[in-house]
Image (cartoon, rainbow over all chains, first blue to last red; front, side):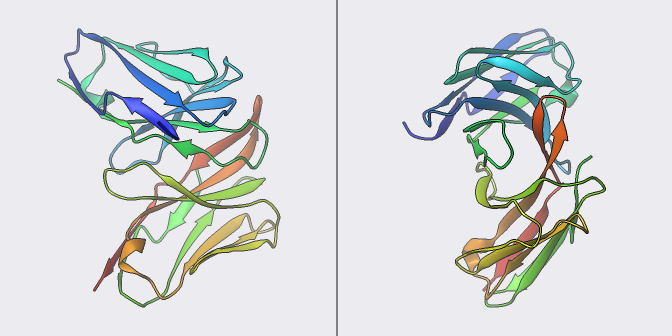
Length: 114
Length: 112
């Protein structure tokens, strides 16, 4: 595997379910990100991890819970979601958090909350 | 904090040129450009770090006017493969370092 991978690619879940999204980067990067992409909206940054430490949490509801066990893996745990949480969830990584590092994105998980 | 992109959408015939603009109300430390094709991940195109900097990638180039807090992406002699949504990301200083904020994107369709 190369680049940034995400599983599953598609997920349908009920409002009472608990599920997790997984992201893995094979680039040796030190920073990882979760973004939410909804129709007609810009990419919304949700969480940032740098060297496995959470450094940004952009007012994301507590029903989204990130986990970064090591610099290569990032999870997003989901529970009691709402229909408006349906979106494409993108994971990205970058070499660092300093200015000027490009981000590499995974293919995303298309989430539908019913 | 998010940058504003214009136009929202553009349709070109193959071989035509286009300009996509990105502006911010805050001081910018860098500007990133990405392209996302339908159903795929955004792909990094280029980054501009300094005011006055210009970069090129095949027939796609960009400029960064730091004083005006603006960047423009130029697509020359467009090809069918250029179709997609173009996002600019502007880096601003945050409490924990630098944060990248994306615009809403510009949808580009190149037709034969």
